[in-house]
Amino acid sequence: MTLNLPFSKQNPRRILISGSSGLIGRAVVASRQRAGDVVVPLVRAKGTADALLWSPGSGTLDPTLVSGFDTVVHLAGEPVVGLWSTAKKRRIMESRVLGTAELATALASAALPPRLFLSASGINFYGNRSNTVLDETAPSGQGFLAEVCRAWEAASQPLTNRSRIVHLRIGVVLAYEGGMLPRLLPAFRIGLGAIVGDGEGYVSWIALEDLVRVIDYLMEASDIDGPINVVAPQPVTSEVFNRAIGKAVDSKVRLRLPAWPFRLLLGQLADETILGSVRAIPGKLVRDGFRFHCDTLEEALIGVHLRQP
Picture 1 (tube, rainbow, N blue to C red):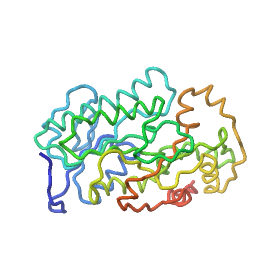
Picture 2: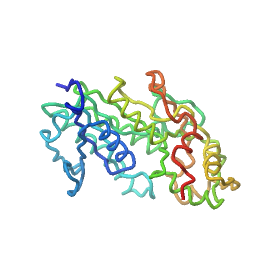
Picture 3: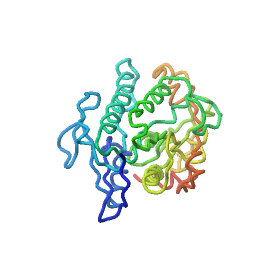
């Protein structure tokens, strides 16, 4: 049984969200609270008011605690950044797959499962695919992160036929508050921005503002299900991407760095992220009529105010 209620200020939507303290989670919580929804974080530790406690992978999530939510937004997972030791890769995989499977199982067993289950995934599902244009019909690729994304999406299977399931294949998120940009900006501001390797690999990006708008849209105005590419319509090469960041902070990008030091230091992580190429496009969103506020990279970089000190 799923919920099918008219939502309003008098009858607010109830939303459960994991990963609420992360970059995306904080923005989604703020957006839904402005819309008048009741947002309940699903957290690991005490100290968060009006939150539900959960230890992902413990097998202890009570279905009665997660019953009666209209929408569940599942964003929790071990950060991908950091050296990929065997232990780190295991945490990346298990935090996503075991946590999603446990949450989906509890929701499927609830008396009132959610109408909508939005679960994070990533465009790394497609693997390193050079300049091939990839919409949601493209098959999965090779590599560790592709394997993680396949297992991550499959882990929501217990909710099949109980809820509308959407897998958010999220690209590189552009925001001043967190993610990749704040780590890059200090170097770019002092003229040390660089093109790594041949610069021909594609970066599929999305402004945080538009990512949140996509999630709002899926809750309120769309019946899309299955995987969706949460990326802007115009992916760019890494050279174009880095030169655009330099321009946004009034700094020319003059350096070119070879790929081999990154491969030496980071190994597989470098090949699947810094040196990888995923040219994903938002096929389903565009066909469904979603309108992006930041269609171009230049618009997105202006929108996140990179000239701030």
